[in-house]
Length: 191
Image (tube, rainbow, N blue to C red; front, top):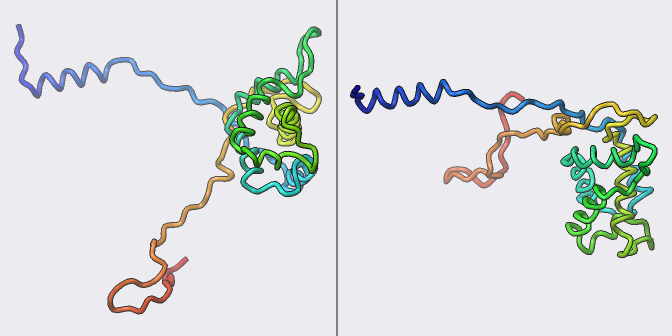
C-alpha cells in the first residue's frame, strides 16, 4: 500500500483529471448581418407598419429576427416546399409563435405593427406573421436564394458589424475636487 502526502495526492488527482478526455463545442458558421441599404429597410417599415412606429419597436422586430436563426430556418422550410404534397406557408406556425411573443411584449403598442385602421385583434398574429415573412425575405434571412433553391442553413447572425464602440471616460461631468470650481471636464490628451 502506498502512502501519499496531501500535496502528492492533490497532484495525482489533478494529473488524472487533466488526462481525462475533454469535450468542446463545435464552432458553427455564422451568417453575415443583413447587407441591405437603410433605404430598403425604411421603405419596408413605412409600407407595412404604422407611420408612427417607434424606433424601439422597429429594432425589437429586427433584433428578434437576428436572435432566432433556427426559427427562421424552420419557417423557411415551410415557405419553400420540397415535395409535391407540401403547401407553401408564408404565415408558418413558427412565425406565428414569434408574432404572438411580439404581441405580448408590445401590449397595447402592438398597433404600431399595422397601417392605420388595419389592426384587428382576432387576425393580428397571422397578419404580423405575414409581415415578418416579407421582412425575412427582404433581409435575406432565409437559407433559400431568390429562385427557391436551398443554399445552406442559417447560422447565428454575426453581430460584429453592429458591435457598439465603448469609450472609457470619467463618470463625473464636472470637476469635483475641493480646489476647483465645478466646471466641465476637458480632454487634453492626444486623440
